[in-house]
Length: 224
Image 1 (cartoon, rainbow, N blue to C red):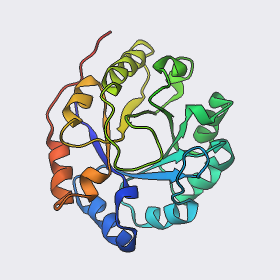
Image 2 (image 1 turned 30 degrees about the vertical axis):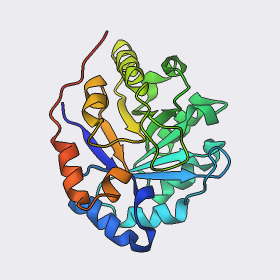
Image 3 (image 1 turned 45 degrees about the vertical axis):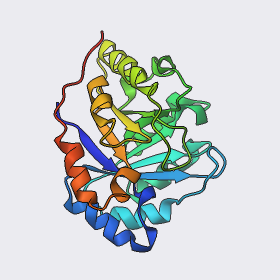
């Protein structure tokens, strides 16, 4: 089964953002992954709608906006207008998660929900049929360059089983510490989208790393 590679621009050199955009456009990457951090839900602050609009104007691929922010429902429409193809919110940040998912659908973007490492898969059981993307955080959110949490692999399997049981169209995205050393394991567990930041933009040959991630040949395993 094919999978997607989504370089995270948070790890790029923002003094040369145009080069990072061109790299993603011309490489074998499939998505742009854009992390929005508010300094409240997570400790750091990154960028917002204005920067995403600039990136989206030049992006030739899926624009994957990951909102690591409090009360994301307030901002769905503005990020959709900025050029997001899909928006992912954190379940932990939404008091009324179903309502926010419906907001994303009404805004015309793919609807995604992220789970932090401590949040169980069962948290999404009642909304899984409405989702396009489930993002399993494989580090604690808010910082780039963290080490992959290997306990996340069984969680990816659990999510794959939940999706299968409910016949959901959702694909599993994994984000945090992803690189050539662990990509095959998460793909075998059922992941379909690999977010890679430092592994790509910290490499001497970023396009080569993307090509290697795309070339991984594996079939996800079902545990249902």
